[in-house]
Image (cartoon, rainbow, N blue to C red):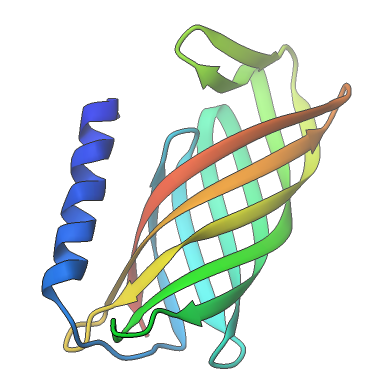
Length: 165
């Protein structure tokens, strides 16, 4: 997805949030995650009103990654249904020949053969639940570090759209 499309999606998300002022909490949601490095499925389950577990199954450039996160949610006063959140977790990734993470358009880190990586993840973002619809949307930034051939730090940002159960 080109950067122009990403910026358009973020502006659309913020516009929707600014015009919708009432929302409610949710327990479990599943949906899609569209990011800069990877795209995939996301499942979030709240363990109580302030903490959640999130699982992400994502695919990228000849890569498949499984991520687990523990997240803390903080309501934004004056904006019912809107929370900011942060968390930590880990991932395991499987790269096929010439799989890679893209630093930018000119630079990438390649994994030459079939490779497996393990690493740690952080996450910070915004989460919103529409009041009269079983839909949750969010944006986040997820820095992560692989421990393979030396530690390498990367990052991914994403737009999430989930259906609530």
